[in-house]
Length: 240
Ligand code: APR
Image (cartoon, rainbow, N blue to C red; front, side, top):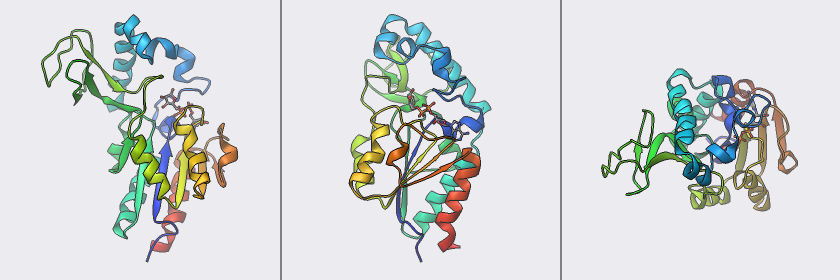
């Protein structure tokens, strides 16, 4: 017995974490309404003022323990587990740097924009778990170099991670689902076009139509904690 679809690629953006209390980027009260992304999310900004960039990410990293995964995160974890149990697969590609998908139980996750809970050493290039504040005084846990640590996140102008894995997952998918993203940042915003070019049907689950809404073969609008569990339940119905 299989579900309606066997091989899914699910792309998530900050909208899936919004109801957990994590700010989105481009909503009226979003992160980029308070900060200039050029100052806090580019290599040039880090070179010009590393202390400002560290404080920007320290504040977000410090907030992680106080937020919890919501029903949408949990629904995607259940989708992955139940599909795998019947020989299917769900690849979760997230633009988010929070750890809410992990804490909800998802395993097959590709953090294409890196992770807030990891720090990258500019000397040995090791990426290590880091829950504390980062600063110019921080020492690399791998090579002990001091003053070369940065958040292990992908800044504007840098190359997103796992692009080959994402391309092959989309090429072998029978459904592409996009959740909680405005479709305004590439290459993530281009994944739906890639899926459609390959004949893969695509569903958008978002609060409102995204910038690339016209690419989707199906769209459902509403809060992720309502729309995502309902959609997952429909997908898994044949297994019940
Ligand atoms: N449920 C579902 N969708 C929601 C909710 C919600 N409760 N709240 C907001 N949204 C939607 C918004 O309508 C918007 O379309 O989530 C989307 C959030 O879009 P952005 O703020 O642009 O965030 P995102 O698409 O993740 O940004 C992509 O841009 O700044 C970079 O690296 C950053 O990964 C980020 C990337």
